[in-house]
Length: 80
Image 1 (cartoon, one colour):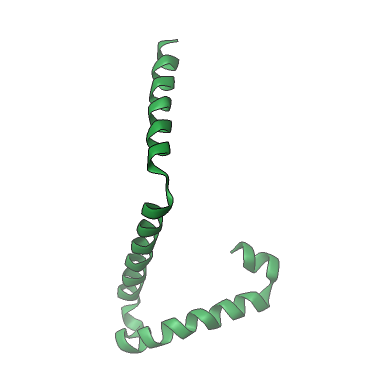
Image 2 (cartoon, rainbow, N blue to C red; image 1 turned 30 degrees about the horizontal axis):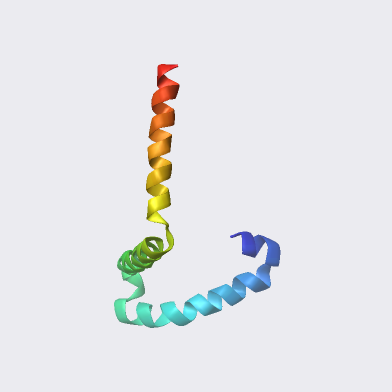
């Protein structure tokens, strides 16, 4: 959305053309009246690759240590 505001109408049209390359074959198979099914499939694909990306890019030991320090801090803060 930010790219559309900054880059203008031309950027919006180019993004639409690129997405159209992917969506036209899907709509021809599923049908435009089953848009919700297409949306569900796309959401599932998005959730899958986001989960995989998160799994391999987050430093879990650091996250665990940070959460433990925050628990201690919150406990002390409540006592005060």
